[in-house]
Image (tube, rainbow, N blue to C red; front, side):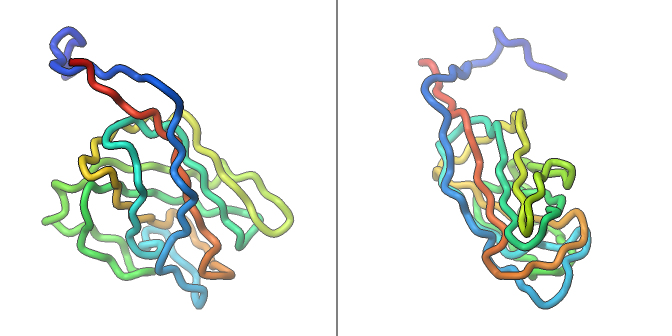
Length: 166
């Protein structure tokens, strides 16, 4: 059920420019075997963000192949119980309240180059609140992929910061 706009106590007013996070290399990845669909892709990492806003665009760079991997980026407002890299992703029940949303990057969104590729997922529109100014992220593979180097995958977000009228 939707809440009528006039009933929102603190309407959001978008002001100012977009906020772009730094490019963050996925930590904890490996290069020995292929990731399967549903595997944790590396370990959790944090991205500094405005305390609230709407994620509008996702950029992913994959320096290991000319075809990119579909992936999900799970968002949390605090660290979660870590799933081992390359193991089936399973969010702990105790972490449910920390969950803020999921960002999806399809394999079809990658632009191929000679030995690497980049993806841009536009018009995402995922709103979040991060009182500490940080989102904790955990990537999940949605295909099979083998990395060539530990620094191959990186993520950047473009956000419209929210301001609240008083």
